[in-house]
Length: 180
Image 1 (cartoon, rainbow, N blue to C red):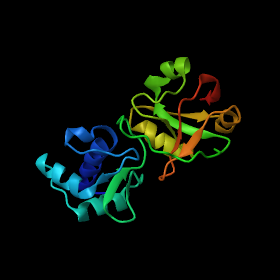
Image 2: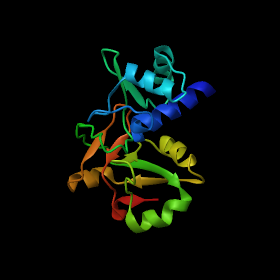
Image 3: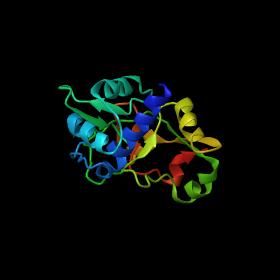
């Protein structure tokens, strides 16, 4: 993804995950908004977007952060929401034995005390492989990958979901289910 697409992806992540009201759009319960409304609101906010650019950003996003509806009229972020109006009805899934969480070493003391918490987001995000988790952790500083005993958690009644882009989601991960 080139520089312009990266900036647009960050803008879309901001408004489609966290602050739709910052540009005056609304998201439905599943996180969808009308693309035409998004284009108008973005233009009022000084962002020059068009359908082709949005299509290109969605198609080239390495993390598959966004989805366009089958009819081509709406767009949403597939996970990572903190907007209170969004509550995507993910389908519960049985996780693999282990999932991974990448974070910065500076957060380890809090994690060792409280486990993994979603913070402002709706869910804790987990990866199916260590390399993806490492890449996520590196965005926040010196990285460490934590191994989560996902199947054991599932057997104990914890619920897991998988977003359209493959990211695993759960409400929280207690300390006893985390290995460094």
